Image (cartoon, rainbow, N blue to C red; front, side, top):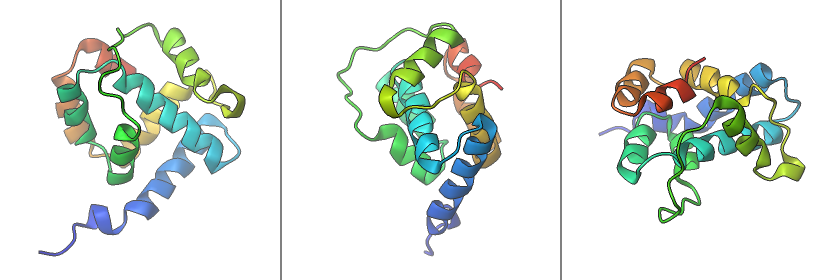
Length: 139
């Protein structure tokens, strides 16, 4: 079997995703964008059961999938979904001295994700998650 294209071009696709997220968020660098994306994924992950999170990860492109599960403490208490403003503050608190995530960070990452993930697959996964999870990824 040949290597699937999503794995053959994972790095290039991730760079395109970062460029879109950077532009949507109005950030200056890919490092700033990486921190924002990582924080958005962590904030979302904290609100899912492990089984839900693994299912969500399966809908992500390979590098985002890896980023989603990196440094995951599966024993960390699960948090409830909050309003967008509160979760945005949580995003902005990740590495806060090096974090330039704008108030629109969750929406910006969601929009970039929709451009780079299989939208139908993502929607199927989100359909099985709580309504608040679907709202998190709404644009």
